Amino acid sequence: MAKKRCGGGRRKTGHSEGIKIHGIFRVQLTEKGRVVGDSGWRKNLVTDTGFQHYLVENLMAGANSKRVTHMSIGTGTEPGAAHTTMEGEMASRVTVSTNAATTKTAQMTAQFASSVFSTQGPKTIKNIGLFNTSSAGTLFAGSTYATSQWNTNQDLNATYQIRFS
Image 1 (tube, rainbow, N blue to C red):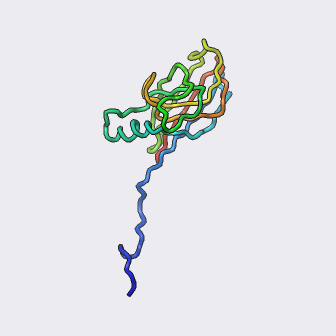
Image 2 (image 1 turned 180 degrees about the vertical axis):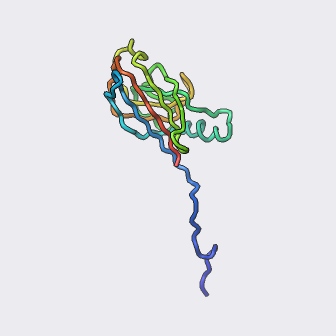
Image 3 (image 1 turned 30 degrees about the vertical axis):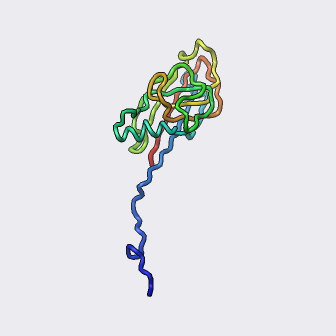
């Protein structure tokens, strides 16, 4: 006697319920309106607390839910999954402008004017992060890129995208 498979012997094929999150960013140094340094598009890391507070708790309107409002540049290393802060973060975070680049992409942009750090002299920068406040707060996502020299006559423009697929 032949065995009969449940479901008529056919595998159901249909819409996948899986969601993937990909974060990417780009940092550009400009001088007199001309791009003089470009990180290119780079991948980022969403931290554990980033997932918890910015994504999961937001879906439930949790008491600890957060949203991205600020971007930071720094001189430190890449954050790990358990980090809540950014190593070597420079003094001033910048408010982000937000928009939906597509129906599945949240985009944040920020401009760090040359005057932000001009009194401190040139800086060697190499990391970036997204936060929920202008100081302290919790790191949502961040990463590093090739070290760049940020001079006092240059502006820094950054674009960050969180893509859902």
